[in-house]
Each structure stands twice: as C-alpha cells, then as structure tokens.
Image (cartoon, rainbow, N blue to C red; front, side, top):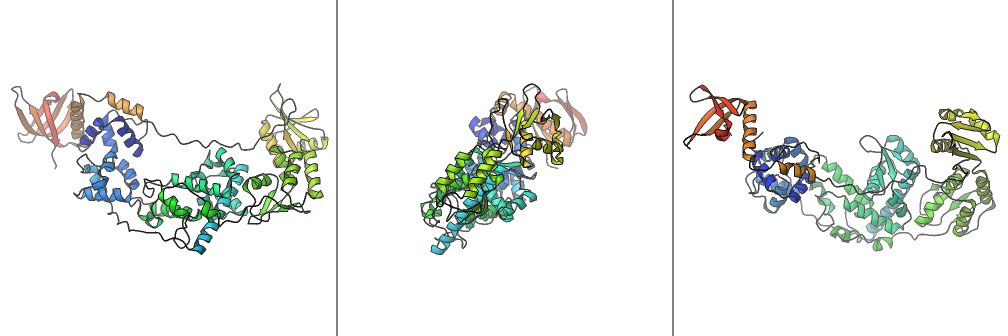
Length: 567
C-alpha cells in the first residue's frame, strides 16, 4: 500500500459520519465495499480507477482549481469542496496520486464569459411553436409506449425496429432520443426490464393543459442537469458555456450538445441562440411559468366534427384530456393544429376492453361533437359492443386451466384450427377450448388475432384492465453507507499506527523495497538501519542490511518507523 494513502486514512478517521456519507456518495462507493479499515478506504479512493471516475465529474471551476493546486498553486474558493471529495489534503495540497493523475490531463480551457440576448418576436414565436410541438410529441410517445412498451437495447437506447414504428407514427428517428430523455427526466417514463414503460405520473400529465405539460417537462429537465451547468439557485448557466462545464469528461461534448438540444426543443433557447422571455426566470432558478409562452400558442378547442366516413376532424389543438380519451376510441391519422381521427371496429373494441361501454362512448361523442353523431358511427359502436364478449376467456377454478367459451360455435371451431394460435396448444373440451396458458396471455393472443374476446372471472363478470399496467414513478433511493461507516469505525483505535506499520512492511516486502528503518533499543535510544526487505512473519521483519551487508531479523514491535527509500 502506498504511503501516500496514510494522510487520507487519518483524515477519513477524523471525519464525521455525515462527511463520510457525502464523500462516499459523491465518489460512487458501493455500500458493500469490502474495506477492512480506513487504510483500505484511503487506498481505494486514491486508486487510479477511482480517480478516473471522479475527475471527469469535476466542474470547470473545480478542475481548474485542482490543476492549479497540482502545479503548486492555491485552489482558492474550490479548496473546501475538493477536500470534501478527498482530492486535496486539509492544507490545500493534492494527494500525490491525485497530482499525478491531474498532471497527466490537459489543462482546463478558460470558460468564456457569455451573455444571452433576448429573443425578438419572430424568434420567440418559433421557439414557442417548437415547445408546443415537443410537448405534443412527448405525449404521442407516451401513448404509444402505454399501448406497447418500447424495446430497449442493452445500452438503454431505443431499438431500430421501435424507431421505425415511431417514425410511422409521426416521430422522426432523430427526435426519439431527446424526447425519451425529456419523458424520463420528468418521471413520465422509465426503463423496466429492457422496456420503456409509462408511469402513473404520466396519466395525470397526459390530461393536463399544454402549458402545464411544458412546465413539468422543464422542471424534470432542470432536476437532472449535471453539476457543471446547474446553478446553486436551481437554474442553469448560459447554454453557450455548457461545452466547457466538465473539461475532463471525454464524453461531455456529446452530452452537452444533447442537453442543448433538449433545451432548444423545450423553447428555452431560440434557433439563433437568443433567449425567449419565459426562459430567463427559469435560468435564474424560478419555477417554470408558461404564461408568456401560452400567449403564442394556438388556442385549444373542446369540440370536433364527426363525419359520415367514420372520421373526426379537430378544428384546432384538442384539449389534452379530450384528445387522450378520443384516441382511446379512435386512431389518430394526422397530427397538426387540426388533427384527424378514424374510428374502426378494432379501436372501439380496444376502448371497450379498457372499461368504456356503448353508452359511455356515445355520451362522450355527443358532448364532443359539433355536428351530432353520424348514423354509420352509431352503427359501428353498437355492432362492436354487441360482439364484445362473444368470446369469453376465464380460468377454471377446479383445474386451473384457461377456458375459452362462446355462444357462436363457429368461432370456437375457427380458433381451434387457427394456425396463429398454435402456441396456445388449445384443446377441445365439450363446447369450449382449454389450455394451460394463463388467462391474460390467452386473452391478448385472441385479441391480436381479432377475435371478439373478453376476460371474465369465474362468475362471468367482465374484467377490464390494461395490457401493460403502469409502473410507479418512484424516486431512486440514495445509497446508505451507514453500515460500512460503522464497520470502519469498529476498526479504528489505538492500534491504528501498528496496523499502518504492518501494511507498510507488507508492501515493502512484496516490492523488495529498501526501507529506512528506525529501531528502538533496550536503553531507550534509537538506531537507523537501511534494509532491503525480504520477509515478514511471526512478528519479525527480515532484510539485508545495506551498510553491513548482513541479514537481520527485527521484531516489528521494536520498529518505530519505516520509510521507503527511493531507488
């Protein structure tokens, strides 16, 4: 173990539990780290791998101050936070491994002073339009993910197949990543078992106004900004300076560009780099206020035109709560300020599965329509509702097998020979079909095959529910190092110096190092020896005395100090 770690081990032992908790969290220490004592902790924190992880996280000011200290200067105002990160000694000098790691890195470039100019009317209008489009696109993404969670690659990105599907639904492939990031930042979506799924928070958000939606997305964006660009007041630095925020992070240029694109999509930055009036308070750390932004957005409408060809036309942006419910009944065909929707048997059947009824659908459309409900649409809703439940899927309480029943034996026969249903291994049982596959899986397989299936319980009561239940948007738990800290405290005491000496001697023996050893003599005096360490065991150090050229064996209890002599 390097002797450079001893000062840090002593600092760790003297630190409070709160200081250690803060340090361990900042340095990404595992709560189950296999450290035996503070010497292990110091060695691990000064390890090259640990330093390579923390240095890229330093802000421009911290990196510049640490580089200055490594060259013999003063860290200035950053001395305290760098000490708290176990990068500087209390006297302001860097630990030797830290200095070596810093000197191997390029000096941080000076951060240019940047100022933002206010946007003119045209730039503000374009920024507002983009923000409105972004909010709508995030809603589209969530609705698609709610219906069918998006597949994720091992690295967390959206798969190529899913991007193609999203593009077919009006979300360009190059916009997917920033839109997903905005949704995740606002806790509207999260990765769950290699799938991107919507959260319970998303349900309320989808039914909020465009202004409220925008405010939530901005708040989520701000909450996840890295330290280098997040200000103590809760805002952010001028975007032009973001490129310089983390000078020792090789991936930062790409990441800062991605953050800048999210800010642009949210209308916090105009295309020409100016700042819209609604962005300035946000940058200063105030809560997002969409009042000025909303004045430039098209007015929402709460009525639509229903047409004889089973389509609906919205004369403007439909109020979000109405849009979400309408899209649960009809498929949206085009997205713009004037959107169009199409009713089909499948779309209405899907609404019935989710809990709608013929009466609730007709009542909703009557309230929503400016032109009444055309007869073809009434007929489609009635016909679909009549067929709904024609095929009943339940669980047999006696056998535990899934049972498929229908009053229409033609459907039973069709399902029995349907090649697409072969994986279910359906077996004929009197006038029904049975399978070992679970009820929900069978139900959705039949639905996908366009059979009018309905899940029911053992008493025949219709069950409703979503294919993919929403997940809770829980806040990630912060690591708790209290057990680790307590364990380190138990090994802290008067024997620390002896333990440290044992470690130094073990390291010297492994390295066949030359030691300057101070030995206590029986008469109370001391004697210095220059030994090439060769062995350690039974409480004794063996080594060749360089001066006398003889082998010596010294009781470790008599050694007052041992220092490695540079070759």
